[in-house]
Image (cartoon, rainbow, N blue to C red; front, top):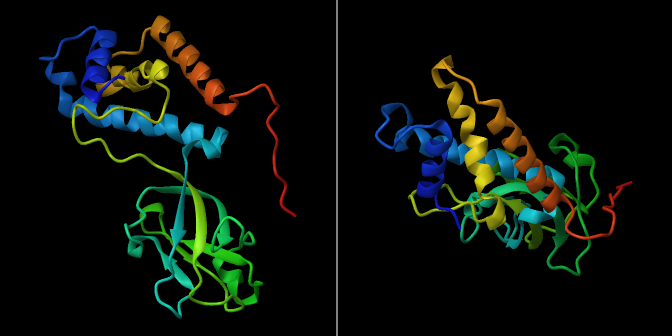
Length: 213
């Protein structure tokens, strides 16, 4: 498994430079590697939303509340990247469908609205729904922010960790003085495609799409 420090070394190898190069020191490469990892995960999320899924129980803000503030959950829900399923109480509960926030006053009980940015999102159910009821939320989760050199891109298969280093090669363009060599560009495209194809479909059965009416 590649660590952030090892990925930074790999990027410098691609760049043809050394660790003491002030243009590509850790303070420059670390946020580039973080952005590269998140960019890959964003595409994975679009291709296969369930790949990053986790399940939590959302507790209402109070016994009489119809709002579920992510920041008030225990522990706070701060890694939200998009909902996959929302149900009453547990996995046997009826599914809820999303409506716009302005539609809530006219919506039926089995609906919800999502507002706010990902880190501070709030789920609100309509006045037709029973307040104080738990919700089961299945959602795609972002990984924690990297903070040390030993952190790794562990949400993608180990055999594709090189893709993070290749994704970070836009560092060639810093300052507008050089471009990525065509051989590395082709390698990045090939390996990225292999990774996305691998996570998009992990079996022989054709993918299906659910249509909500």
